[in-house]
Image 1: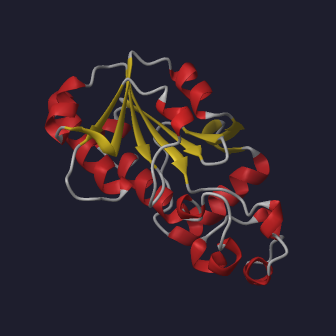
Image 2 (image 1 turned 90 degrees about the vertical axis):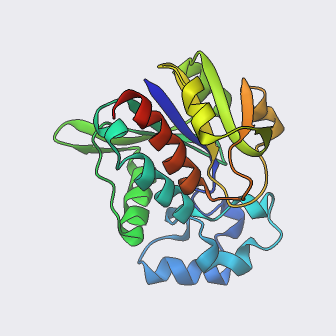
Length: 222
């Protein structure tokens, strides 16, 4: 089983220190929710986010949405050959079940994730579709227990999608950053066996995910 971790993702509820900001209150009212119940989104909360810690890596749940759609809409996933996890910047982990049909609408996706934060689990017909737990990156890697962990980063050793796909075995964990700018935290790099650069262009996470998984698919399915 190949594991994919979308790591340090820009997905989190509005932190307590921002919940009284006018932009947060306004967006919460718009959706008839409390400020503590909505996701931090730079599109709505740009003014509130100015100067917060790790600002450039936060407030982009749309990137996670795109990445999950890419990972969970392919034969590799539907044939139960791929486990998908979202590790968030504030050390929570969302586990994605098998054969989950995620909403293609961004607003529906946001509503689903906000419900997940509130309930801890999304179920259908006694099957767990999504589950969220407090867990740091290191503990997630220990849980997966892969033979090798390969991180894809602009600071990695030059390689290619094809070469990386050839190195993937049944117990590999691929790590892709779920943020728009910046680098992986040093504390999490300790869990990488290898860090590679697969494209000279600074592509977004969902593009990297789609291309590397396609190359792997060609090896084992096509």
